[in-house]
Image (cartoon, rainbow, N blue to C red; front, top):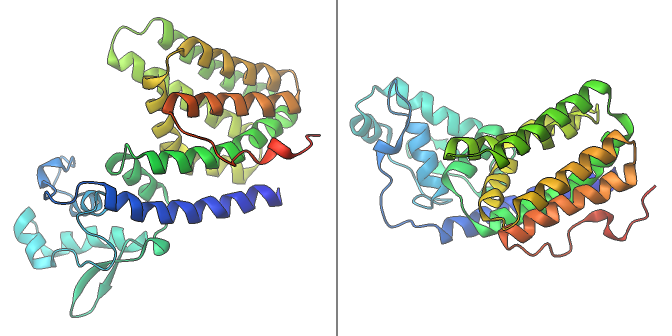
Length: 283
């Protein structure tokens, strides 16, 4: 367990550093259009600035537009602007400096695992090979252990949840006739992995599955599009399910590794020195 949390700490640090590379690599010379804000009630300054920051328009040390300018741009009052800026302050992305305005903070200060921030990453900073590689490396270090633990602790209702998600994957793989049904395949794929986290009956792992859900979806949706053999991918998922059901921790561990190695292959990502269990003796 100490190794797992050590890996988590390393990968959180990596996620912070890759954001800097991500900002440099994303187009930053064209202004973000406020029309991209999707809030039907009123324009969201928080979403507008999040998109601008994650796409590299504003980088650490830059000041975002003044409150009065944002009021004019979005035709909303100052109270609404301040409320939206507070959302960015609360997750560590900007800081308010009295008499100067709001400045983007250094990446190390961002609450990178906050669900709001993770969601912004997946919506405004993808696709990005570097961030995909780091998310995959994190999952390779963690999810095989989660599957191994699930094989030891899963209860009947957990097995049902895993099986239902797997059946949903299969149905929307073979019967998909439109983009919506293909999207459902990815939704069930994510639900499959989340159900395994929950099957550990550990509150930390369960909560972590919610935090990581947007990042998992990012990889799942991209790999399901680019894979050349979706049936083989489905079979790898079935192997994980069967080994958890059969209470085979070691085989569940290895099957989970195989699933993620398949994801890496589909995305064209080198796994490098990931996989904590590669050199460890499994009990």
